[in-house]
Image (cartoon, rainbow, N blue to C red):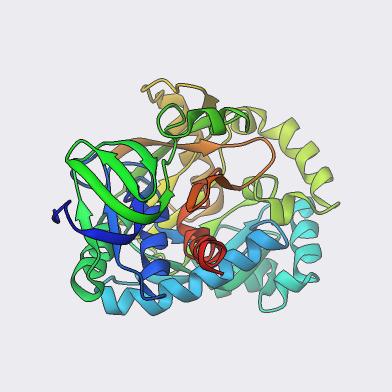
Amino acid sequence: MVGPVAQSFDVAVVGAGICGLAHALAAVRRGKRVVVIDRDAQANGASVRNFGFITVTGQQAGQCWHRAMRSRDIWADVAPQAGIDVVHRGLVVAARHPEARAVLEAFRDTKMGEDCELVYGSAARSRFPLLNDVAAALYSPHELRVESRTAIPKLATWLAEAHGVTFLRGTAVHSVAPPVIETSAGTVHAEAAIVCPGDDFTGLFADRLAAYGLTRCKLHMMRVAPIASRVTCGVMSDLGLVRYLGYAELPEAAALRRVLEAEQGEHLANGVHLIVVASTDGSLVVGDSHHYAATPDPFAPERVDELILDEMRAVMRVSDITVTERWTGTYASAPDRLALIDRPADGVRLVLITSGTGASTSFAIAEETVADLYG
């Protein structure tokens, strides 16, 4: 989708991943004329290399959790309009250790756990037949799952067709100084600009980004052939309870971490925790791991995948696991924040999701950014 660069716009969004598309939506909902500019011909980064799992439960208490709740609501509103299938809803967190059960009990007693249900032992197995014997299982109704590889293109198409958003694909942005945005396709005129560079820290506003101590996180992902027990909600496990801050920041998580360090130190060293979600054909998307570097290497050691699948076998009733596809992804990471909103100039906002929460929080962050621009 390519529009005429001679046209003037109210807002230019740089970047057509989920963060950029969310900002385009927030702007058009305020009646703004929007152009989205992206250097790639199609979505190719973190936005399509993930679970497509809009995760609420487990997000850090406070702002992040509220952003996830709001973004979930926007996904639920937008998905049917854009022809995006919600494959399944909900999340079950399986606790294999007594210490993990204690974390889930503490979480259930917070505001974030009010709508969640905690079941124990045989009752958990009866309620969730796909699980092995577990100490407890927490069910959250909040989550929803889309197939990100198709959802992101469909979202872009809907923004163009239903809301008149212009897309300039295969176009590099050289400079941003509203009302002038210089690109490889010529000059674009826009009164405001929102730059969503993903994990590119050396392009636009590199000097601003340098101050935040950013790095990049590489993760392993797999697609697994359908298994006997159909997965009807997302699945997580003990390892996620020491990684997702909504659990990990609870005092009870310290005892669980000590147990996991003793029993699953290699998993923790590779940043492994378990997420399993299903696709419409019954296949499963399974991950993931976390390795940090300024420039992550492109290699995917088999041992890391084995650790992920080891946790899947420990939690779920699976026998043979057939991996049909493997890939890696990268995203921006910061030491002290889950998202970054910077103001490099009047009429310009620089927005990065500096964690793995892009699908889960971008819509809410976009509303905040556009409100900040326009009051």
